[in-house]
Image (cartoon, rainbow, N blue to C red; front, side):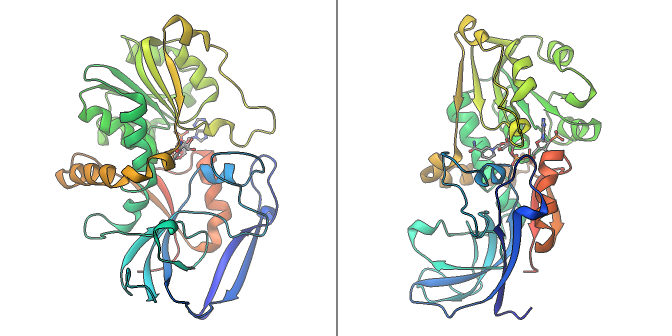
Length: 340
Ligand code: NAP
């Protein structure tokens, strides 16, 4: 492939259950010359997110579905290779919704979501993690929706993942007791020993009820839910008066071929005068600079850690995406597309 050729993964069909290779089409096309106001970005790292599974579905959601034949939507970081905009110059590092492709070409205006990033502050993959969309999800979801107070117990699922790891570390900063839920002994050890959570429950070992009793002896004040399903149901039996449940995600349900499993124990919300509230990170985009500044400060101080799981090569996109749903990623999953 010459440098003047682009390659993209396009959505070929909508999956039923887990996506398969047939749902994708790898296409190749020549790069057109830039128009006034446009920039071209060489994509270096792509963000692989559980939300991508939802974007492949038809139907109403918080964002329109990816159309059949369209380049798959994805957040990414890259470097500007050509510019016909005064706002960016060749060599600038940027983040934006570049899609699953090698090059992005578009207007460098306020609408496009293009933002300069500083690789001196943190390595590029971290801009897709703690300083990127998952970090913003953790920051605003926990602080604005969860509203934890010092001394309260904060419980978070998918605790070793991109969002969960940052949620727990922010909650520790605030002086909370922090308990994670994750799959497997290695992830649980990482969450406690590296990230500083007070405890972590391995849901793959069996029902989480006994672990909740042991590690949340005073009940749960904030539950940051990334997984839904039976884990959410079990947590509902342990919540405190006025508890806050942040519905961030429900990854256990994304590939269902049967209806989504709702919480059977929801009357616990009534009994405890508790609330459960959904959040979409994009609602907070005007406030991202605040979140980035705060998390960057904690990164500089070394008090927030981040871990990325890098898979190499655009051609591995279909298989790499599935790792999220099998718990095979250990840290924020990113796909390396090119060398800087
Ligand atoms: P991640 O946690 O880095 O990766 C996904 C993890 O989910 C896997 O590693 C796995 O961890 C766990 N998982 C997969 N299948 C599961 C199952 N059946 N039951 C329980 N756990 C399962 O991903 P992330 O990017 O940080 O996203 C976490 C959640 O936040 C997702 O639900 C995502 O959709 C949501 N999210 C929401 C927003 C928003 O605006 N609302 C924004 C970003 C992300 P284990 O090995 O521990 O099982």
